[in-house]
Length: 119
Image 1 (cartoon, one colour):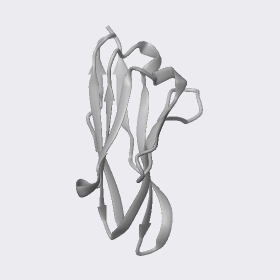
Image 2 (cartoon, rainbow, N blue to C red):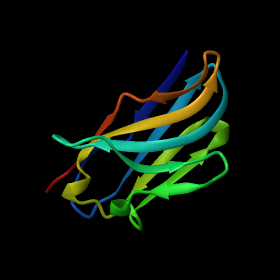
Image 3 (spheres, rainbow, N blue to C red):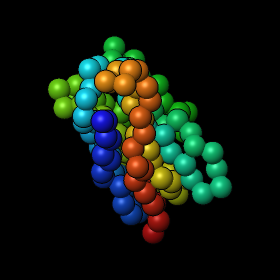
Image 4 (cartoon, one colour):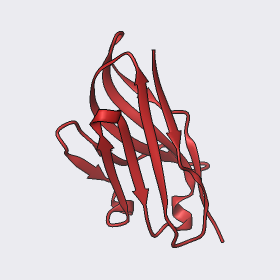
């Protein structure tokens, strides 16, 4: 019914940049919040950034000033521009969307995309 497709992960050197994208498709009536989470090996999944339909944005303290979240409502897509990456940013990044679909309102997760920061 609803699919989230992520792209943009990869290997980058410290100080480099990456841009992640997550596109939602399927039977979608309305999208509320869209966000990015990450999970590093041996750690719990944590919020990186999220943006509501009203434009409210929240960032984890560890990424403030380096990451920028944005969304294109016409494309049901959320982006995460990541600059000044360091090894602490290495993780699998997951897109999460709070939306109203045919099955009702629910959270949907993407499959995850690996981001590795290493020289």
